[in-house]
Image: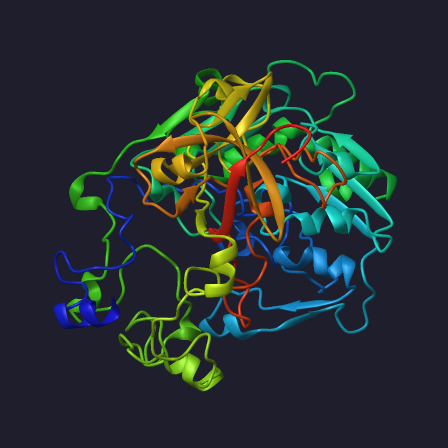
Length: 493
């Protein structure tokens, strides 16, 4: 790819790689903070607050004095083995990919309490039976889960803090804007919509908003005022509104009444430049992204690419300096056969089907799935069999025929790591030897001992390998593995 782009002239019309999502007629200069841009956290280290909002919305800063961290993929090892290591990339510079961390960090003890907040790891992390075993380990003394739905890992918690739904709290946000996590992520769409989330009803039962849960905990620690700065949820929404460019085009009163604002596309002559044309023309970088930062340029800021030479590199100078003899990540790109694929003859004889597990089409990871909602009526998402909604696995018609598998029949998809009960979709759209089932099930429903029994909820990631793609990187290989598929009957194989 790099060779092709170099020979054809990277940046010339029609010759580009990366930045390809930029170009839709959206206004990249209109500012509204994304979900990782600070919000009300005041976090200076792990959000974009000090870059984008330090002048727009002054607030009490916060910082975590504990530098210890654990790569998400290695949480089970940290609990079960009381130690792990990894390379969680620091994106501020090209050197950030080489920073190794160890757990426990020097001077720190292993963690004994786990506060789980967010989507289920069972549906999204590889070899997720490890998480079930970690939850049940004596090394983990106490677990808190903050959830709306009783799904995934909530049932493993000692205490569940019930969070309310979006209909029961105030919020403000922009669709597809993850600013602070990824710069100008809204360019994934061809329009920008900023929405005021109105509180429809009071929280049901004993549930509370996430903000209120954190505030109540902060009060018990004597930190309530420092957390809230003495204002309510809707007042924080107003502060975020005022910190954006919205007040220049719509009043708070009108925005509250209308509930949304569509950012108009700029005239063509005012649109931000795109792609690598600046590189082909030998000028300074002029696309509206902040990276790389000045320290990563070899000669002059905004001049050249983010490589140590500033040019397209067939041999990576940074990898050559860091680990020139690393067989897993050599400085020159080479073909490496998969360590779990048909090249692995012994494993392939035992598990002759290659499972591909992409992101789901009808849910976003675990979001929307497993809520007894209308998504269950989507026949390509889950299938109702004997009163239970089963996750889908797609299998080639010939492979299904040889295994006596019919359309929508229940099958066991398994390997040495686990077993998942799914409904088979027989199709001609997959080549022989390949099966497909998305990650992202919100339901973890083991038929026996958690971590050591078949799951009928659909957590395909029970089957994927927890091995990093390479040792010197926090990289997952959770989209492909080898499995076998057989008919399944309740009460036996």
